[in-house]
Image (cartoon, rainbow, N blue to C red; front, side, top):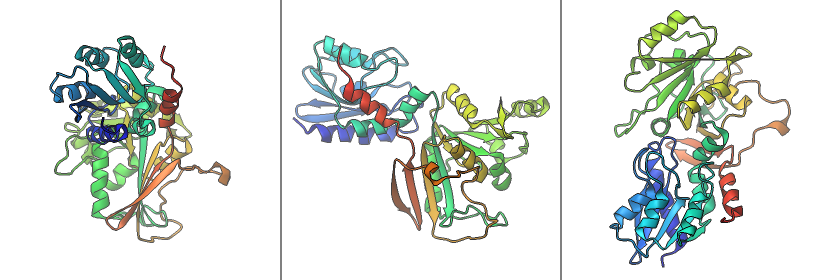
Length: 379
């Protein structure tokens, strides 16, 4: 028997390769142990075969009496594909090792029950924390009915994103900018504010040579000031654009944008700014699970003031800009008491070229699935 943790760890590692392609489905890795050898499979793309099915296929289909590892409880309902429990049962698998149980209300242990009732031995909770962290965005999407929000900043070591003149190119180096392109490509939506559009005229696409997909771009523009000739609008046919604006915006500009294949959505305003949570609800309703915020001080501040950031990717350049009038990376109202400061759940620090990258997890949704897995009793 191969080491259980080693096999599950490899399933997790391989599953990460599909990030950005599974849309509202979770990342899942699986392995069939046949003749003391592991045959792996992952859920490669939304609408395609699930990891368990691919692992069985890679093992040659003849897997009767074999064991199956899977990072997430096998699905038990029909969706884009048939339920995986049916394939597992019909294949003759004798035992299934599961990393974490699925807290999706449609499943929640039902896959385990079906397998057990079919006479298959089931063990769950192998590397539960790691398997749960793999699908943290999916857990939030299922339980909070909101997309998972990653916010990126790029600042000097004193927290500035521009000089007092407004000049900002470039604070961080080429390696950091390349990594940001990758982050965009792994996201469903890149969100920014009209201030960033007016200042930088960005595309907000993944412009790496090997880019496999492009994100939707979303712009917060309460008064619909966007220039009809902005670069982001010119590229709408290859990478869609959504503009969020206030409820009293005139319809003529909306029609002009609609003619250019730009979706315009009205949301309420709070204190002169678009209601960020309503924007996220809208993106959830449109079927987007991962939102990457790449904006200026004001929008960043609004996300933090409303406690809507799940993960922070903070690039810090070894530079000092200084000046009380220089723009800081996070604006907004802030806090009045240090006890109210936002504290990271955990973080990692790496270098990226000459820059520093602090990757911080702010909300811990993974713990919910781990707790459910730990306490679940088979019916």
